[in-house]
Structures are given as structure tokens and as C-alpha cells.
Amino acid sequence: MKNKLEEIRAKSLAAIEEALDPGALDAVRVQYLGKKGSLSAVLKQLGSVSPEERPAMGQLANEVRAKIEAALNERGKALQDALLERKLREETLDVTIPGKSVETGAKHPLQIVWDECVDIFVGMGFQVAEGPEVELSTYDFDKLNIPEGHTVREWTDTFYITEDEKVHLRCQTSPVQVRVMEQQKPPIRIISPGRVYRKDEIDATHSPMFHQLEGLVVDKGITMGDLKGCLDVMLKRLYGPETVTRFRPHHFPFTEPSCEVDIQCFECHGAGCRVCKGEGWIELLGAGMVHPKVLSGCGIDPDEYSGFAFGVGLERLVMRRFSISDLRLLFDNDVRFLRQFS
Image 1 (cartoon, rainbow, N blue to C red):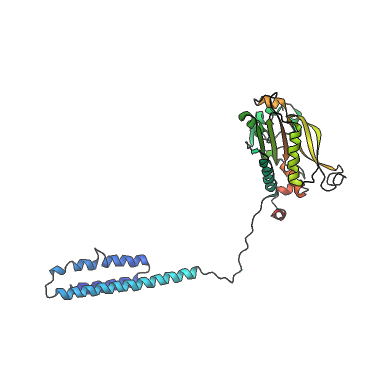
Image 2: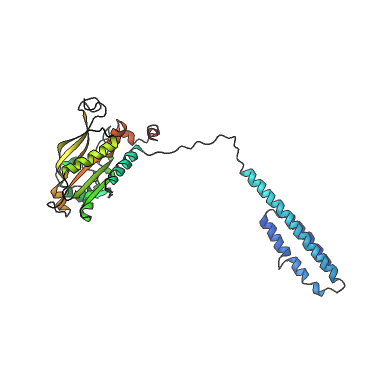
């Protein structure tokens, strides 16, 4: 038994020295000191040793156990110290190295004006409504009093998805108004901002894809005065309290009467200059009272209810707000231009 204990001591100490990580060291501990370990197996045989040799063998077994435990503790501490040293070395931060500059993003000018418009109208009790960008011609034209063959339908024709020209990319956000009127009873107060598509050529003031903000109010006793007051508030909130607006007659199939809304040129204040092309006024948006045919087509009695609607290109609002002369700048993603709005 003495030889067996000496053999366990020699092998265990050698295994402890060879352990390279805490996991391997713990495996050595279990192998020699565990309940089913080598030392425990030898201790179970003490009963077969003669009474004269038993005290000496027990003392030797305790010395071997103490030696192994001391070696395990010492090796464990050494491994932990080595692990900490390696971690500190790998995670060392040289505070003398210049830091990396972090560029912060900013809202796109379109998003700035979009959010401001939403805030203005939500503050006046409007709700934001959304609809599909791939639309049925029934909603984009027919229900807006624009039948097939109508001249307005021809110049606003857009990109068709189906051969029968029944499904296409919407050319305005007005279909959202129709869908809301079909699903909701008056009173209705909504705005519908979103992307729209037309077959326009790309130039300084046109794009085949742009953004539109439309509004709709339907209730009892709504008049043209309500429309003028609403738009006047919006434009003064966007461009300042000194903004002067002008309403002049126009024609839209889905409103009657209809009007165009201009603002006085911010450069010359009505005198005429290159910005307003000598007119003194800058055309901004179209509006009017919702046509009775549109109301009745959506299940609303035009004899009981009336309403107004308006639509404006968001790009046009942005260009006037930030004095941008070319619409293409809003879509070029040139960071030199966009940094101005951070």
C-alpha cells in the first residue's frame, strides 16, 4: 500500500504541473481526490492492513492528500494569475492613441418638413392616414371623378403593373382619402403624406417619384373659410408669421369650387424678382371643396355633409423652406449638400 500511495503522489503532482487551464486542473482533482478517485480507492483498503501498519499507512495517506491539495491550490493560483495577465495584455488600451471620430447622422430635409407638417396638423386635430403605393385605378381615378379619357387622367398617367391598366403606382395620395371616407363616417380630419409616382421627366422642378401631403376634412357646415384658415395656419407655421397667402380660382375634377394657393415671394415680397419670375407670388398647392360626386361615391350624403381637401408636393415645401433651387439635390444623396441640415 505504501508503494501505491507514493505512486499516486508522484503521478498526481506531475499531472498538476502539466495542467494548462482551470478545467484540466479540476479534472486532475477529481481523478485523484474525488469520491471515486485513486486516493479514495486506496483508503478503502486500509481495513485490510494489519493493525500494526494501519496508523502509519493512514498518516501517509493524509500526507499525500495534503500534498496534492497544496499543489492544486498553488497551481490554481498560478493559472488564474496567468489568465488575468493575458487578459490585461490583450485588453490594454493605449490612451495616447488619437480617438476615432464618430459622425452623427441628421434628418433629411424632406423628413424635417414632413415631421413639421405632421406636427402642425396633429396639433389641429388631424389624424395621419396611410394607403398602398400600388393602387387600383378605381381609387386613383374613377372615385375621384376622373373617368377614362379625361385629360387630367392622361397627364397624370403613371406606371402600370397590369396590362389592363387597372393596377398601377399611385400618382397621388388622394386614394387614401377615398378609402378613409368609405370606411369611416364623418367627422373626418386626416392628412395622408407619402410617395407618389408620375411619368414626369427629371429636371430642376420635376421627378417621376416625389412626395405628397394631402389633407381632408368632412363634417357638417364645412366652408371655404375653414380651408383658408387651415392652410394659412400651416404656411405661417412653416414659413413664419409674416407669410402672405393668396387664393385664386382653378379647376380640379375632385373639388368644386377649386383654387390654387400661392405665397408671396419671400425674396422680393411681391415686387417681382428672378425667384418668382417677376410674378411676386410663388405657386404652392391646390385645394378646394370636395366635389359632391366624390362624397356620394364614398357613401356620404353631400346634402348633409361638406368638406375640403388640399394637396401639396412636399419637395415644393422643402425647396421654399430652405431656398433650394433644384429638386434633384434632394435625391442625389450628396453628403456635402445634406450636411447643411445637420
